[in-house]
Figure 1: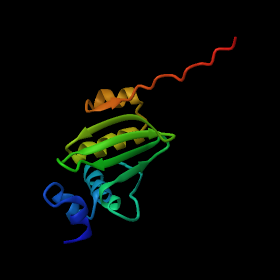
Figure 2: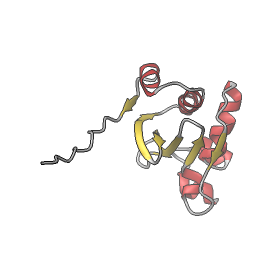
Figure 3: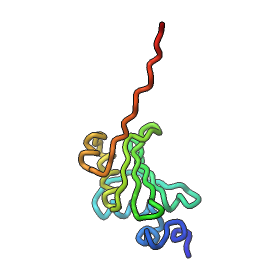
Length: 132
C-alpha cells in the first residue's frame, strides 16, 4: 500500500490516491475546468502532504482539508491567519471554483452568495477600553 493510499484511504478518496494527493488532484481538476488557482502547495512531510492543500493569492489563502469519516472537502478562507469564511462540499470541482473565484477578487459576500455551502464567519469586535 502506498503512502498516499494509507494517508487518504482508498475507500473514500480513490481519485486522490491515484493522483498522489489532494494538491495534485486539485491542480488537475482546475486545469480540466479552465480555472486559475495560482500557486497550490501542500506540506512537505507527513500525512498532511496528501490530505491538505493551500492556494495562495493576493486576497488571502484558501486552505482545503479532507473529511476522515466521510468523503467531503473542508474549505477555509484565511486572511492574515484569521478564518473569514468556511464551508464543506463533496465535489472537488466546486472546491476549485471557490478558490478560483476568491483568487479572481470576489468579496466574501459575493463568494458566499454564489457558493451557498460557504459561510462567512462573523467576528465580534474587540471591546473598546473605557477611559475614565
